[in-house]
Image 1 (cartoon, rainbow, N blue to C red):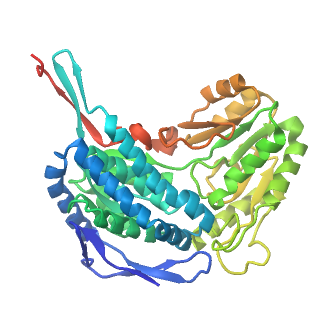
Image 2: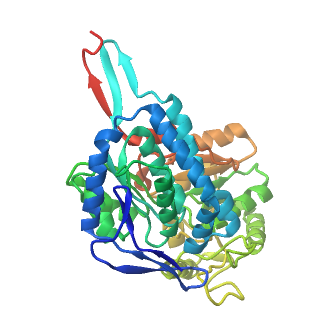
Length: 474
């Protein structure tokens, strides 16, 4: 049982102003795995005050000092790597192999990437007699989600530290263990007091207090579009910068000339990984109508081959994160059936033999139309919708016909055609033929998938203000 009841403010572990405990549920067992304290506005006020005080000195640190700090954090992270992976499996149900190879790995990956970017990043540019300087924006508020918990913490904290900002983090209260371990790592690495602060809590209280706080200069939020809109509205009164990475309903266009077996199988696996709980998952597969029977057969085989079970075992899928999430997914699967989509694999209820835990059957629907709920709504579970298309122009039109624009996928044998299709997709990232992630590639979305970018050098820009010093070189 984990008891994480303190907050981290001004370099020390402190009690909340008003004690209030929250049970943290293990989604594989439905039992209580530990407790955290729920913070309040008063706790946020203390954390922001500490960050504001620390900014005066931390903003003046040199590039070399910040590189050294990040390197110490990497060293401490590696010492706690196994602890981090274990915590992620316990708090949100990711299979152990996924926590080891991907979930925990992303944390150290973003830290190392920030170090490499910082070594050569140009903070100053001379244009004639004018100096254009990029300076740290100030105190940053971070509100992070439960689905890739330490990944989303690292994508914000690492570039913020690298650029000279101070910060207050609110990890997800649904999966808070990894955020607590991250904070222990920061303390062990000797991050100066007040530079990094952590307050646990929920969105309506701690999240809202961070978003609206007049001394927070920038807020970065990852989560649902609905919650992102609320964050932006609360931030508007103080005209702070708002960075958001929100929902997605990514199209995966399977071209006619592709190796169908490989492409469809890859598409199914891409949706199922992390139990479908990835905002950039390729949840809408657009396949040639004349090949639909073959596509269905391949998709059924891939889905039925996907094992579901105890995340501490060898299963490919663990549970989804919570009862709330499980119920939402079940409701959308039922809508898919009721609205007339063809159920190819999976469906309602838990997989056979799993009577406890928030497990979902790997589910595939075919003959889905763009108007159906499962084609429009972000399900955030292991559910794939396959939509037929007659022409390539129609496929692109359907692919872009969404309020989201986080990612898109294109698979085909002719690389020129694949690139041409990619150029027409309205999405922040387009992944071609199953390409692996690029830690330097900007990550973020068009439309209601958010604004701004994370990852690599583009992440630095979110945490910098631009100052023009005219006459500097006179």
